[in-house]
Length: 155
Image (tube, rainbow, N blue to C red; front, side, top):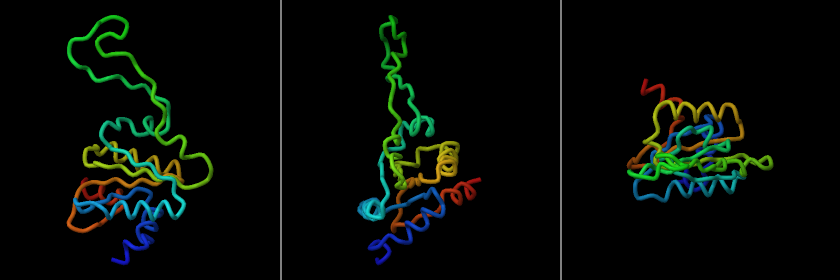
């Protein structure tokens, strides 16, 4: 239990690996304690769901277009059948103001493809201040491993 009290081992592993795959008990609680410890250590954190992430680099760092979902029969006027593109702001842009490290906590990471997970790994290599925690499923006890090891084991 002392591991959850300080979060030091988790933070050190996160800083070393860049991206961690997290398996947390389904009743919750442990991951929010870790998130609080990281915020107390100076991280600027953003929690979001991995569902609908699309291209991680564009979604997180660039101004990008989003179309509404196709709901069947629609007007074929100006927006055509797929709807008009709405511009969405980058999700992490405001967190990179200043010099503090940035943490992205992705919920429901099990829906991400291998290519998306690899692109998250590449993002942390390009932007050293960015650290990512991807919740990849449940477990009886809280455990984590570097995402790179998870990808190597699945290959």
